[in-house]
Image (cartoon, rainbow, N blue to C red; front, top):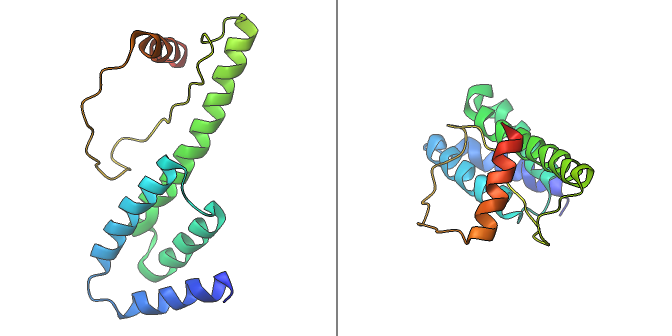
Length: 134
């Protein structure tokens, strides 16, 4: 079955739901996890589905999901700028592949954050990025 037909079928089913807000909340949570874990099959199809949701329930319901995609794009650009900065300084991160995401506060679903103590080498990387970013 064509992806567009599948998305239309899902939207038709969505129209029948009484708890649309529950669906939107769960979809947003799952979308956030897929984007952060880079496990989405296709960002293009995710964005197409969000556009279809927007037609059904309005821009206010899907603004946070659209912002998630903007955050991921901006994070990618920022990461590339930081990499260029390190290369220009001729000061790499001691062989560490460093990647971070910069997320808009209040846009992303709340997820449990297990306590984490970074090793000093990784803490140095985050400190260097934070200093550069500020």
